Image (cartoon, rainbow, N blue to C red; front, top):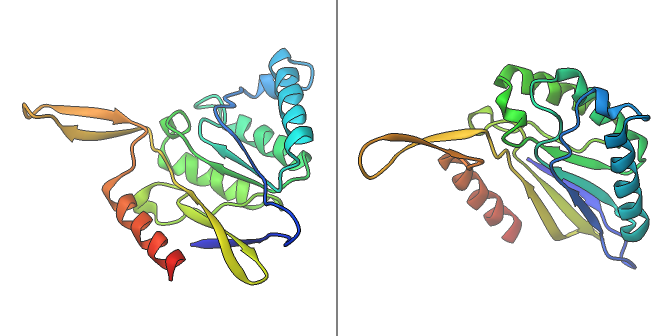
Length: 182
C-alpha cells in the first residue's frame, strides 16, 4: 500500500523522526513533568526542522495502556503536522486485536498517515511515497517491528529475537522497492 504525499518543487521535504515516546496516560497530562519534557523537545525540534511529516518509529506509549494511545493521537493531531506512527516491540506486547483497535482509532485522525497492511506481517506495513510534480522523488517504508520472533538456534533450541522483521516482510519490502524503481 502506497500513500502519496506532495512535495513543493522549491523546498526539501523534511521528515522529523521521533521514537520511544512511551508515555503513560497519566504522563500525557499537560501538568506532568514527562509531558512538559515532551512538549519542550518536540516543539524545539519542530521549530528548528520545520517538518512536513513527523514519523514515530515505535514504542509509542506505555505498554498495555490502551487509553494512552488516544492521548498520544490527541497530542500529535494537536501539532497540526501530518504524523505517521508505526508500532514497536513495547506496543506489540498488547494482543494483535488491541493493536488493531488502536490502529482503527488512529485512522480516524485527519492528520494521521497510516495503513494496517497485510495482517500476516503485523500491523502497519506501508509506504509513504513523496511526489514532486507527479513524479516519485523519495519514499519512506514503514514496517511493524513486532515484539518477538521465534527462531531455532544452531543447537535446535527455540529462542526469541526482539524487534525483528518477519520473513514475509522481507519479500514485501523487496516488492515495494521494485514497484518504486519501475
